[in-house]
Length: 170
Ligand code: S3P
Image (cartoon, rainbow, N blue to C red; front, side, top):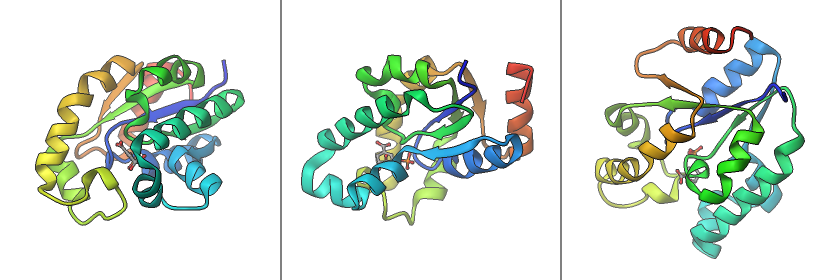
């Protein structure tokens, strides 16, 4: 067992902030798939989408997951669309315990309304975009997860308790 936690969930569900907190708490190393891609590509996600398109970005995500397969004792925060691709399904399970941070559309709207870094949310009505994407993704997130944590109004400490209870360890 590689001892990794893999955090999945919609944009704005707190994967990065909770993931970093969880690393401090448990002594794991933090890996963020978006950050890795931006570093390797030396350009922003907005740039990648604008120049090469979403499909190209999805290929980069799958390549990266394959590279991460030997990582150990990590918290891996995944881009919101990464778990959706069928190609990535077996990779997720290999990467570690998959934890879905489930967050309400209201909370996501509040957190994302001023965001300019996510190309899939650019332009138009933010609530419509989030509701539309969530409608397509929610059941996939749930199906991919080993553990689901409802994050609304919860402290990180409480979320961590749920992880400890689920896995009887740190
Ligand atoms: C995406 C989520 C983003 C990033 C890209 C696409 C998505 O990551 O990978 O903008 O399809 O949901 P975060 O979930 O970390 O914002």
